[in-house]
View (tube, rainbow, N blue to C red):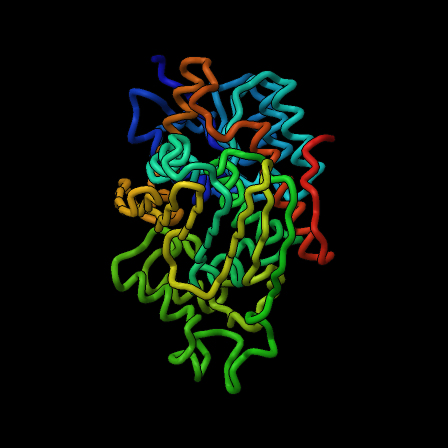
Length: 418
């Protein structure tokens, strides 16, 4: 196969992660251009990939003004800035890999999908959980009929106490007006994954959830607005000083430390905690997204499911239980325990896993996504893409319906037609 060329739009954590796969597979792909407004991130990625100055752009608009420079583009900009660059580059003929969520609003999701389909380019959404070896193994078991007809599923996303504080209280996804609501920002992965594993569209949803803990009225007596100044910090589970300085002292300088500062030393982290958003008390931030939420789902054919997202867990992999007419499956992101109702026996199967989160490649999902999309572009065959436009839009619409249900206290249909 011919090597595929890429332009990376957004050289932050996600764009850089996908670019690392490209660097590790030079016979299959290369990065020829980068667009990123932050100089440090832009020049760092350019240096890693040997991108000359004339193909380093400080905005996606500058890239879009050029003749098409690569076969495909990776859109890894902030959530609110996916639609315009994706539409512009699709019109230029770039095949597109777009980070989830597609957009923070239902109309913009529909608009983007319509545009890329009209352009006739290959298109994949970064629903990386679909591409994990663990998911592939689970999907094969279900599709083979080993547990009969699936009637119900329970799925837990244990965000983790410190991860939630990092990303959704202090961090970039703390406010729905600056990124998107919690279920879309974090858990559209999971709603999409459930649809993929069950193999049926989601038709109705209801939901409950709230921002209950990370609120000013829950700040401990005597606490300060910054962890470095706080007398009660040693006893706080959400201490930024303990989290980030502990990571640096232990030699961990990548994600999430790299989000705080371009200087991942103890001095650099202390300066970031002193002046930046990640040093704030979790009880006095400007966050508004929920810290726990439950979604009830009804699939086509009558199967039901529940999804729980909560901040108040260890930072670990998802937990899933699937109940069928002939057996059941319990999974923890690596191990699957299959119970056969006919024999009464259980079997444990293990899938390879490289870790649970963005910092470790989502258990092989990042690599699986890049390999599949690169193959699709190289061959012109969309078959390797598991997260294409139509089904990704469908699962985004289920997420929007669930949020409407949470806010209104209703049961909402998932309306996939315009």
